[in-house]
Amino acid sequence: MSIHDAEGRPQHAARGARTAASQTCINPACAKQFPVDQVLVSCPACGAGLDVSYAWGDDAPRSWEFARHRAKAGVSSSLDASGVWRFRELMPFFDCEDRICSISEGRTILQRADLLCKHLGFCPMMRSAPGAESTCGYACGQCPRTPAPAEVGTERRPTQGGLFLQYEGQNPSGSFKDNGMTAAFTHARMVGAKVVACASTGNTSASMAVYAPHAGMKAVIFIGDGKIAYGKLSQALDYGALTLQVAGDFDACLARVRYIAEKIPQAGVYLMNSVNPFRLEGQKAVMYRVLEGLDFNVPDWIVVPGGNLGNCSAFGKAFMELKALGLIDRVPRLAVINAEGSSTLHRIYNDLGVRWNGGAYFNDGGKARVDREYQRMDEAGERAHTIATAIEINRPVNLPKALRALEVMNGSTRAGGWKDGHEGVVRAVSDETIKEYKALVGRYGFGCEPASAASVAGAHRLLREGVIRPGDRVVCILTGHILKDPDVTVGYHTGLDAKSAKQPLPTQRPHGEYANPPVKVADDLGEILRAMGVDTSTLNLADVGSVRSVGKDY
View 1 (cartoon, rainbow, N blue to C red):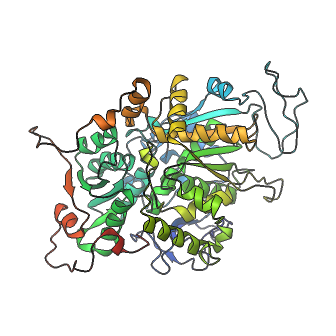
View 2 (view 1 turned 120 degrees about the vertical axis):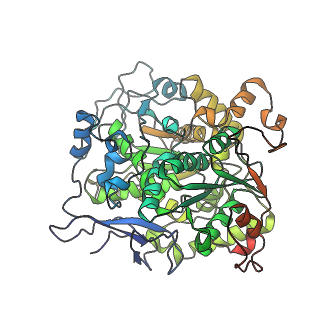
């Protein structure tokens, strides 16, 4: 039974068959497939990333009626209360619904932001169409009063453009990560996992920690020394996770936990970072809710912050599949916004010109250029540094999938034969800009963490550049809640450097009955494993020293 390829071309199951899922290598030159009940974070054959892929059967949705029906009928089951699993027909990798691990995540909605929209110079009443003048009923004098052009496609299209905010801070743990965790924990249940682990700048750890007790699993979190916002750290500690504070940055932590998960089966670790393909399956649902908020019409732009690049990768995969199923008549363009102090994708995409090229990235020199850039960064001692800790990542593990998303989400239309698009864009914004736009978002009633504000700052920059037009319908993803990093907010409005004023963790042993302090460990595999409670007496760890000896792919 064949699976759709890396470009999302529909390869359906035999007539009368049910949809079948597998894990498929994203490198088209390899394209090997593996069962969904196998625990993998990369292709064993070539080392590339994996997709959860589907051979769509007769049970696959061919319209949005299943979603519209649930919206009208209300919550008829616990799964329908989840903004992820009410779209379960579009992520059917699970073997039975009883294994699904949900805490009613994804109950977020698309917010119109007309006041912010007008402040930034977008026009909520305009509507741009390809190759046509904009039309406006707004008395602002910014646009010509021409008749509204007829729009292409079979879907109903709203007449309004403007700015919309998808506020994922309303999730149970306060960030978008819950969308992915519910899917990954469902897979962890399927494979009988007992211990889950992640490296984190904060949001991943908080989300994993809150799901682990519900799934009956032990959670182990790797955080970099001093590289986490206290609002996020407080969640992981309160939810009972073992928190290891490793001497190093996020990239060092991810290298360690990934190595342990893949190379030391004695540890029994199931990896929960977004290199896990099942994490990205759940994050597709953010796009389903965006479409739901627009009555299943496609916006012109999706603008998202870029850190480890899991969100943009998931969004690209979502639109590949929706296009293959015939559920959309166009795809939006994608804009990924880095922080300047953590701008690896911006540099690789804009300065080095690396592209997905239909998957040829692995063999056309693109990957080789990325490897050389990483080597240069290591030799120069470059490390990510930004006030937006959620995207403070030097080596994004989903880089190839993000390049694919930038190619797939190109604004093309069915009416144009899917050949009338323009590739996505990447920009980087400064920390000062992020703080200013964070305050602006808050001023108009949508408080967010710093990384979220990068999306709004990036959208406004693209508007000023003329890449985004005033009448385009633009959706910015706000990834996390304002209380995730209150120090930045307080510092901006008072001038107090709350982060510098804090003592390092920990200073003394707490005395509370249920206290759960972080454990400081060196960047040493043996020390980390012993802190996790793993018996290392039978392991040969002599040849594994610092994180850089683990290997370039970790």
